Image (tube, rainbow, N blue to C red):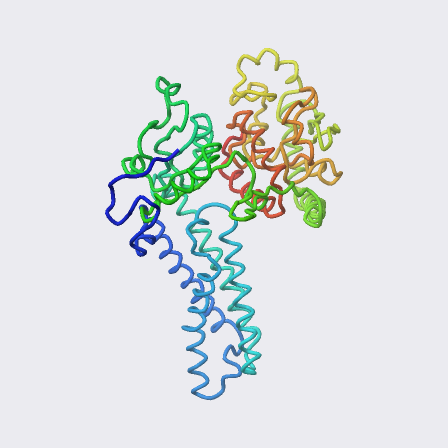
Length: 497
């Protein structure tokens, strides 16, 4: 896979030994340093704001510090020692690790872990020195600091995503492996633009002759030194794809060659659409075994999901009843026909149920669909058309605002659907073969990954991939994230027609 590097940087030798230890800390890409500095400033501001709130809005925040010297120590603690302790705690839990910037929950998990550490630290200090401090002030300053740190980091992540959309703050990646495997990794990372991985080339390890006449999305290289190729492309990350990492000695030598160059080495195994929490590294005698856990669609988390589904749906139906009544009147006034449209859909374990929606089409819509099939703008089992003449005037507004989906709360209360899950497909589309059947392991949802990732703008294959990803990697945290993202998607009205 990789050849021995000859010449190049005088600080390196080709036997895998880096002469300059300092060069191990020099990286080809330094964007993360500015982002880390911005995070430190945001975290410091968050902690100081929490001190301002605690000092000014709580009753007797300096209780227990009676003398002038003790009062000076109180302000020293609030304005200097506590903020420094927060920054050290965040640093100690890895909250500034560049690997977690921009994607996933790990950054916020580590931030919450730092908050727990600060709570334990303050409690231990108060107990050790027998300080009769204001418990309300301590609770406010720690809780507000934790909330503000997470909020500021969320805002920073949003800014990072905007930067990456503009081509800044990204990692330039050289993909290494067989062309089909490298191309699959290319497509995957291009779909996740927020990750900041931008493929700039493919280094083919086998079958180079079959790629010569292909129209490739990025330049393809073969037969040259890998590290030299990365230098020419200004790639700061080398990604070994699939079976290219089969020879352990080649991969180890490539890692040696990259020492001191400031370039990262990552391995992309042939395990697509499996989330991080299910994947664990288990080293055995120097052999890193990749352990993949089974999907967890049971247990206490699943019980909490069911309780939240039913309670939230009942509350939603009660609170939204005036809106539902107004929509019903508008539908009856706009066109003849029933208020609700009920269609047989496939639910969990293949059982069919009647899915409730507000009627958005004329009553003869089913008969007119056959004449419009040539105008179908999507693939797969669904029919979608942006300017569908069967949609009523009120129906267009209902679809743009997604209000037509609200009656599905009835299905959630009846246990036929969930707030979050795969999209429910019509039962008349026939048997669900192959991978599509796996989505029937869970109840379909009013919202889901496909809704917050493009809705009707997605292809059938992408929609199925997202539904299967949800089933294989379900967690209560994922459901909450999707619910929050749904609000933003509904407000933007993207892909709703």
